[in-house]
Image 1 (cartoon, rainbow, N blue to C red):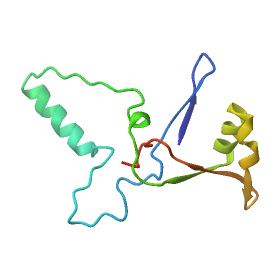
Image 2: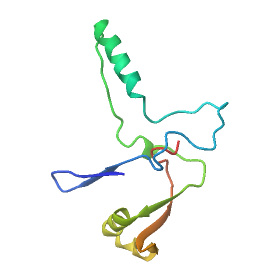
Image 3: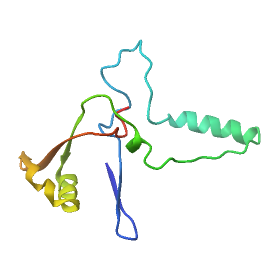
Image 4: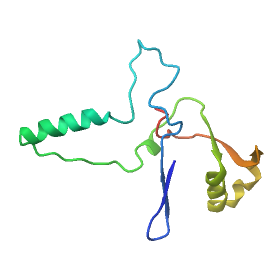
Length: 118
């Protein structure tokens, strides 16, 4: 997970929940979607757009994955600094802190989809 502190002091985080591009249990016959594109695809479409004189616009929908419902039970383990940040943001989570190999951990259950889980 990438954590960044903004100039106003607010923390912002982004990351794919398990770092994988697709779910492991999907068979090769099933259609799978990737959360990111291949860099070669990006370069190729950029070249075509430039050669054809196309106008290109990009956009981001803030929190799109945070708004998506999820239809399965998924547990997420927050370790180390992420566990500390959660407790710092809301001290009521301190009672859920466990230690594994001398490292803090908190197990959570997702209510909404997280990037990489759809």
